[in-house]
Image (cartoon, rainbow over all chains, first blue to last red; front, side):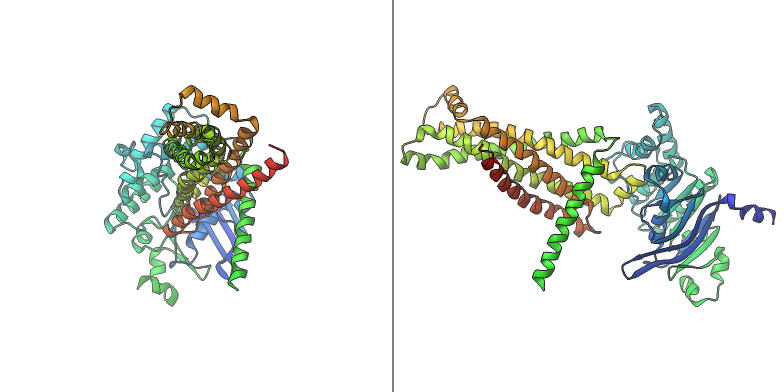
Amino acid sequence: MLSELKLNTKANKVIIIKGLYKSFGDNHVLMDFDFELIKGESVVVLGKSGSGKSVLIKCIIGLIKPDRGSIHIFGHNIPDLDHDKLDQIRAKVGFLFQSNALYDSMTVRENLEFPLRRHWLEVSQKEVDNMVISALEDVGLAHTIDMMPVELSGGMRKRVALARTLILKPEIILYDEPTTGLDTITSKEIIELMVEIQQKYKTSSLIISHDMNCVRMASDRVVMLIDGKCYASGTFNEIKQSVDPKVKLFFE
Amino acid sequence: MSLKSDLKSFLTLNGELFRFTMRFFSHGLNSPFEFSEFLKQCYVIGYKSLPLIGLTAFIMGLVLTMQLRPSMADYGVETQLPAIVAIAVIREVGPVITALIFAGKIGSSIGAELGSMKVTEQIDAMEVSGTNPFRYLVATRVLACTLMLPILVMLGDAISLYGAYLGVNIHTNTSFTLYWTQVFDNLTFGDVLPAFTKSFFFGFAVGIIGCYKGYTSSKGTEGVGRSANSAVVVSSVIIFVIDLLAVQVTDILNY
């Protein structure tokens, strides 16, 4: 009870979204979406393809500007921030892209060094090397440091992308469909790695997914994104036992 | 109806390209400038294009000489062959052909590279990493194209004139010194300067159009292919438009 009260204080809410609205022409993707992410919590946003999950996560990181509504991260409203301030917030928020988004023309080492060099200007080469190796060890791929992304398998690329996300030691990690395109075994490994990282670094996680294994294994709470709104919210078991026909569809 | 929609898409393309160009001037060159990426692009765009430009320039000089010889011989001015070839190559053929080859090689590669980066979310990843992708990807490539093409044109002209020297010597025996004396005696400052100046504009056009097409590429692999293709087509057309304008300006300035 005490911990629940502690969790609900405003200071512990790292992301607060209110009345988020985004449309593309006549396609109304997000319609007054409300959401909160509490420090240390892992939330999965579940919705069918085209429901606006990726739009939501890109609005949060500032890649897409919402039509209206507020997205507060660490107390700063993202749509109102200038580029410099947004970069400061982004340094605390990791983003794992659906397609991994590794730079093809760079080695694994250069891929990991890239955000480090951009955000932490005063860091020495020795520190950079240590941080790159440490991040790769976290995902079990230290031996790939001088390889090109094209030489890696799909699962390895996802791990390297996760290492790149981790290198700035973010307080929040946003995962956009982390298991898409992976086989069942590799998906399970990636989900286990995500859980392990969250426990090790005490990060808050927002995971966009429609993979039920991911929802079951990685979520403290599940938010259903249906018709552009937060349709339902609860633990995996609570959502699974829901009698609402729209929610039940996901578990059939 | 089709003509109306074609006209609308043509005007839209022009408007968006103009805005993209204005963005380059207003934001692309702001501090911090990505100098190491710019140097890398100079190497890729300039140095790595030299073999192709050199080969085509050599063949162009040789063929042009061989094609001109019979007509000049008919008029009895065969001895003026080095002068005519030099003026043609320096004033027009060299810059335009080099720019077209450059558009084919560099314009398509920039369009495809940025298009594929867009499709695979690498540009978004760059932005999330605290980097301005426009400054990092577009400004460096456009500037490298603008500065490298004039250098390639100069080198291409020199190689082309060497090819012409070999062409002249197929039927006559002209010494190397005499050939170059004839070339330089007939070239004026007014031949070199406008051609050199317009090659900066050609380079800028190839860079900005390649970047625009790649940066605004639609989703999917088909979009990447279309970006690469239209980068070459549009920049080739623009090269001829710039050439036409350059001739008019040169004419007005009495060069």
